[in-house]
Length: 149
Image: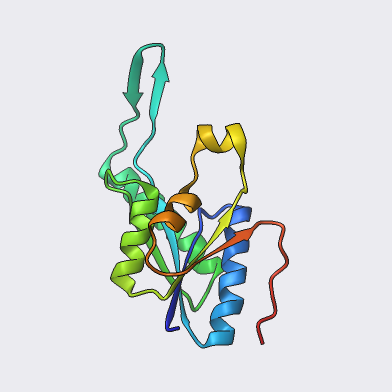
């Protein structure tokens, strides 16, 4: 295994996945890439009208820079990538990045939603698992980090 791609949204849950991936990468001697996907601005829907909050290219770059700085500070000596969805879904962006990096594995945390929550919110993790051609390790947020050595 040469490269592990781990996804995070910089939330406490997402950061837990990075801890698992770091431990696994260290045990396997693999390089680690931390990926955060910037989704396109979500539309605000009221009644039958939808409105997408306009963000300038500068605002998007500022958000990206702030996120990159936060992740680089949290995970020094790690390759940090910020990718925009560019009208693709988040899961497609993750898989596209994994392919371009020639990643051997993807690590993600999952909320573990079921039933109505999963139906309403969807599951990026489920889509990645269904469409990935490489192994995907899903970690529940409350799981302690495994000692692989």
